[in-house]
Length: 281
Image (cartoon, rainbow, N blue to C red; front, side):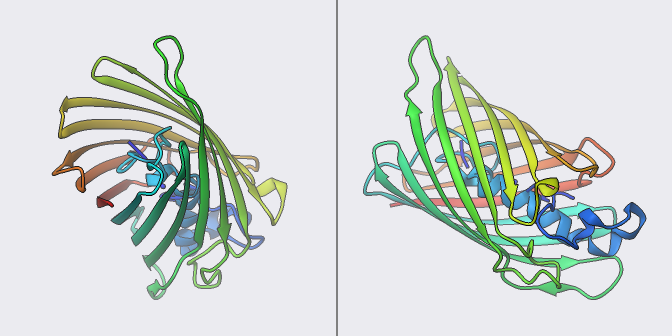
């Protein structure tokens, strides 16, 4: 599975929530946030994705949970996806391209570029380049019969999106994640623990916890599911998204994926849908 989800919420990602700027909705009175929900959604998603979650991992799409898999040395993967997130009556559409490079055995570098379109209930729509994310991940331990595979990931979010238009965080962010996975027969279990450091201040930092399961129905078919929680250090509400989807591999060169998620808390997205295709070279 792999890898970034968007806020997929109100963060995806890199983080499913928007904790990256001094004057974002995260720092406004609760009742005044609605017109700026798009900004809150983008950051959380960026974190998950940023951490290689939302498709940051070798087989992670369509989930946001990071997988210890990495691209083989000398090979390249290109992920192209379209996400839709509904929060209350506001919609965010995000087109995203992710390029991953296998550098050494177990070492992968990647670049992610999102293009969000925000359609708020109040005010005009906004569209443009979002925050670009550079990431690296390294598999620390290979899976054995007794122990899981373990991976460490690091990502840097650059404030390339226009903060005033709700397209970015306004400040850089650094994300770290530890991922572990264990296969038992046709089922693989994955867990993640991540943390996002926001340059704007520690009160904007957030923890991310995730768990996922993949069931290999046939060599080309997999069913996947996950639960992801973003836990801000501030008084901002916790965001929890539960998602299920499927992956179909046409060949070693191309695979399709899709997933649908729903929020488990009042402040989480109502619905989050993603579809994508991954090309391996």
